[in-house]
Structure formats: structure tokens, C-alpha cells
Image (cartoon, rainbow, N blue to C red; front, side, top):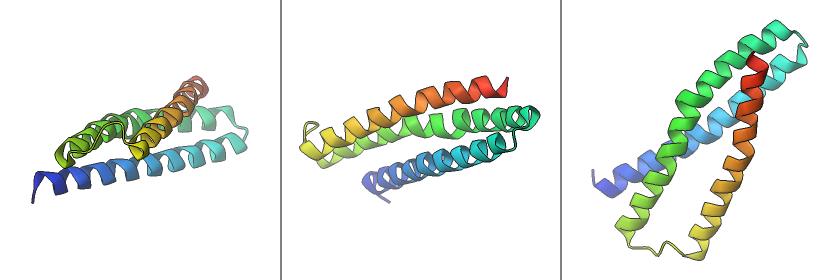
Length: 109
């Protein structure tokens, strides 16, 4: 297996982890909050905060590293319009995600 294929697999899997954990964590926190039981919200909050740090944060680091490595291997320009759009979306999602992590952390207490 070539380095390019390996990096592509890692990049796709980390993207799937980001999407999957984001959707799953949002679903479980929404369901816990709907119970209106503070103990349930706190317990689910502990689990999702742990999942955010173990899975989501790891994928958040791996995603740009693997992406930049793929760009380098392919010889693409870092300033290609589609890459600039991807960087912007990545930052936008991060700006949306960080406050949610803080809120989840507060709900866990």
C-alpha cells in the first residue's frame, strides 16, 4: 500500500469519526436533556465529554495533518480555491464545536 493510499484512508476515517462522533454526541446530549433529569444530563455529559476528547479531538488533529500530507504528496497548491474553502469550513466547524464542548463540560458538573 502506498503512502498516498494510507494517508487517504486515514483522512477519510478521521472525517467519518468527526461526523459520527459529532452526530452521536449531539443526539445523546439532546436525549439526556429531554429527560429534564439533572443526574442523567450530568452522567451523559461525562461520557460525551470523554468521547469528545478521546475521539473527536484526536480526529481534529489527524484531519489537517493527513490533509496537508495529501496536498504535499499530490503537489497541489495550498491556495487552491477548493482548499481555501475547505480550510474555511474546517475553521467554521471548529468555532461552532468549541463552545459546545464547553457547554457539555458545564452540563456534566
